[in-house]
Amino acid sequence: MKPPFLDTNILIYAFTNDPRAAKAQECMTKPFILSTQALNEFSNVALGKLGMTVADVRCALPDICLLGEDVLSLDRNLQSLALDIVERHRLSFYDGLMLAAACQAGCDIFLSEDMQHGLAIGRGPQVVNPFV
Image: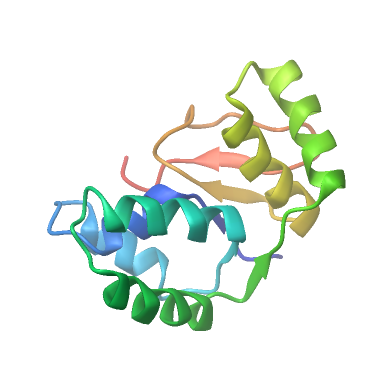
């Protein structure tokens, strides 16, 4: 069984004092997969809302990548699959792109607080909210 795919919100909570931080950090102690999109979104939020410096983010990204089992790059095939997912499930494009990466990785579980808990993506992953 493939490790779960982590949505950006898991990464973000892991770097906060939010009550969900401990659970997010726990998710990152086990094998997981993520995409460059999650790293990009994390960087954006870290530099803005989290108040991290560029140096902080430069240190955090390699650490996140070392913890992860794999980091998927985005490509044209993922964009096409994302559009199929968006059309079928009425999700935002960026959520569809993240789920497309999870499908391509062969993940059964997609950990996210931002999408409907229990949503199943065809033969792809099921969305699981680790904070419920």
